[in-house]
Picture 1 (cartoon, helix red, strand yellow):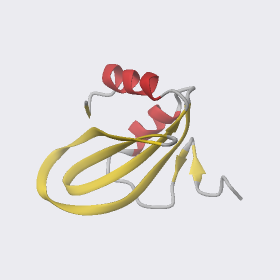
Picture 2 (spheres, rainbow, N blue to C red):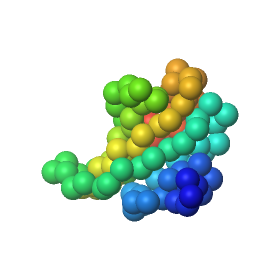
Picture 3 (cartoon, rainbow, N blue to C red):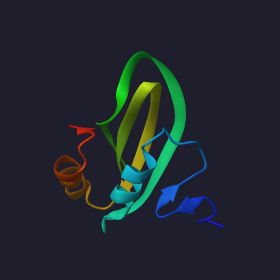
Picture 4 (cartoon, rainbow, N blue to C red):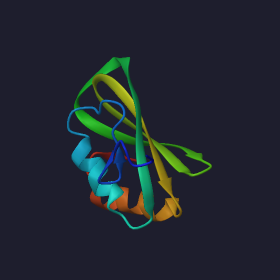
Length: 99
């Protein structure tokens, strides 16, 4: 049952910050992206009304993104064979991306 929680390449085991799902689906549609795995939502002190994505560290299978909106933050694990291509796509196509 490996695909039990996956819809359009995005794992849906945890909640997803409001407004983030359509962006994740666009990223997951990239040919070099195998999966997107959102982590748990955490509460932060800083508050921002708009949604922002920030590039995080590299991982053995790709890299991390951090999504922030309001006082919520969520890590997203991007599983990819070509991190550079995905980061180029984020910079060119995703207006919420800072990196």
